[in-house]
Amino acid sequence: MLDVFYLSYDEPFADEHYELLLNVAPHAKRVHGIKGIYNGHKECARQAMTENFYVIDADAILEPDFEFDFEPEWHQQDHIFVWRAKNPINGLIYGNGGVKLFPTKVIREADNWLIDFTTSVAGKFKPMSQISNTNGFNYSSFSTYKSAFRECTKLASKIIHNQKDEETETRLHIWCTVGADKPYGKYAIQGAIAGKAWGLQYRDNPKMLDKVNDFEWLQQNFEGEN
Image 1 (cartoon, rainbow, N blue to C red):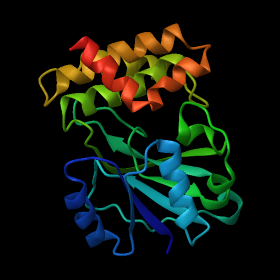
Image 2 (cartoon, helix red, strand yellow):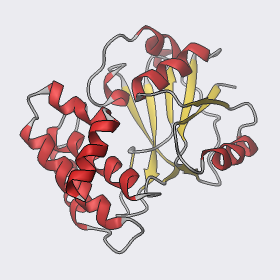
Image 3 (cartoon, rainbow, N blue to C red):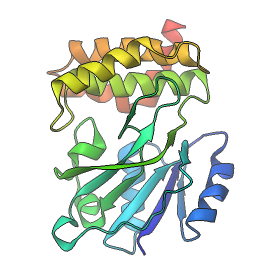
């Protein structure tokens, strides 16, 4: 049985979701309040007692049939596995916000990373076909804007390893146009449009692209638009 980590920061429902997770994975550990995506994952790796470990974000709403029972074959233990998640605003289903399985040693030893942590830190990325959860990022106006901005910056700048151009363009179009009638949907579209523009403008400037991992900067950006 592989370690499972529940990664939370300041989500208002984090305690409730953790209790629900314990019904599925009673051994799940919580890593809470660590600033920065990279630092949060490094702490999970530090605590891990198994060769690979699962990470589930606090805003993930697990599918009833998802279980943390997959274990990689020996020749894939250095891969990162990402399950698919449902987007509650625009209906997209792909790896954004899904459950992830990381190689412990690789994450512990990582000392640099690109803008998209999951697809860059190990260099060996494997998408899984099963849907693990709904990505419940739309719990406030800012959380929705932030998630959309970050994802569409990554899509537009094409920094994600092995992106398919046609698939990426389709996802970008849907992010930027669909779901205004959903809870906080207008902020998803607003963030997507702004993130797409940022990604296109700074696609050759990693330092500027990395702004998407600075949540204080994103907050200022959001307040400037609203």
